[in-house]
Length: 64
Image (cartoon, rainbow, N blue to C red; front, side, top):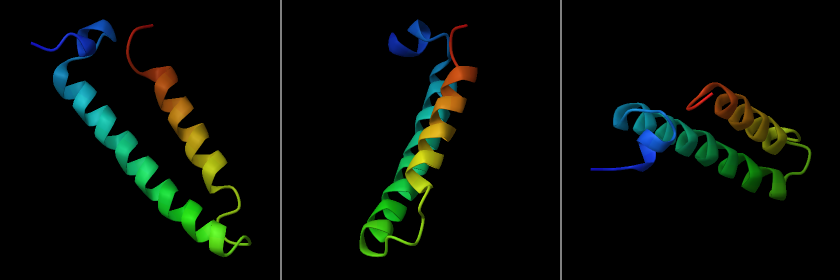
């Protein structure tokens, strides 16, 4: 039915879980970015940390 998960060498469920994990990471990162915008001395590295976490995950998932 869906072609994209197969294109990235994943089952539908694997792709679903990965995408939901990204949504969680991005959601938390968004809240931290808003707080950082208001209080710059809080969550100083949160955006970099979230980006690094996403990149690390992407390197280990899907087609190799």
